[in-house]
Length: 410
Image (cartoon, rainbow, N blue to C red; front, side):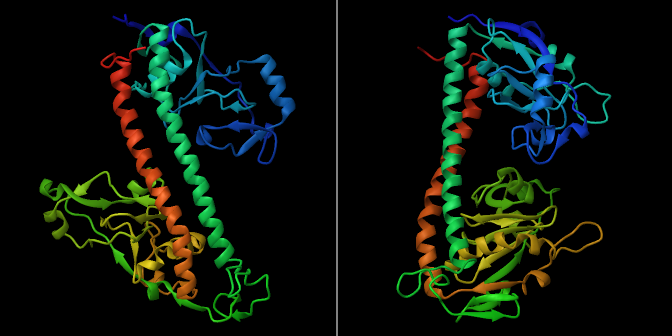
């Protein structure tokens, strides 16, 4: 039976961080990526010069490839395995343990961090994980071969999730490119299968859009193609309103899920809860648009569901318009956001959204567009559900593996 040992993180290596970078040493355009806490694990939006980078790298601490970076401010405990590419990290906000892997493999350590409930000291004006908090945190560790097996199982799941996401992004780019090519550049196939505008298709000036559009196309309103529907919240004082099987979406759900398709929520309501308020059950194919706190989160309902009051959802009058309407709203989101008004917080009203102009292509072209992107949407949704299944599997396995409750044979 594998023997598990307990270590404080301070026992396996020293905590390190990069030297402080002054604002005047950065620029927003080119150079070596400088990751602040706000961009940790994402894309850098600030850079430092190669000369500054090389000078500091020679003089000060710097992570080695494979070491695990930790966010120590703001959102505590986010982790990234350093890939060894040239980059610089915000001092004290992004730290790592200089680990020689004689006791704990870095890849295993990465998953240990996912299983830790970090104890955060008081006294800071912002949420912060101090070095002593990290040093005194205890982890359970099996022998190195077992660590490797555990990390391998979890990393294989993570790689599959990452692969699915990458495939989904490629599919989304294909669908978006088709929309842009046909409905923004107007190079949809003409009667002979040639790109309409590039082949000399007739264009006419439209006074509403202040631009040329294909002859025969019209400019309608959002309210012409969709019923704009409000949501509501059942009383939270009545426990019987919650815990049912009616999917009930809030802007927080869309913010956390960050995805094109919505088919579950963090909190469902009961039939009693549904009847107790003025929310509406909307069909699959509805476009969910958050109308406040914040404005602009966008998703497509894949099941019948309802929302709270933070939405102005668009129920297409003809469901053939769902995909076209989704990309039309997404394309003009910045203009839609400007419709928001209010003294306490900005909110879009039904009255302001209904007359928002929308370009009306021919029904036949919308049908062809649906056929082409419909296959893409189907593939994407399969990938999304697989990502959710794998994520759930990983999250269930993680504490069991890290606590020795589940063993992996060779």
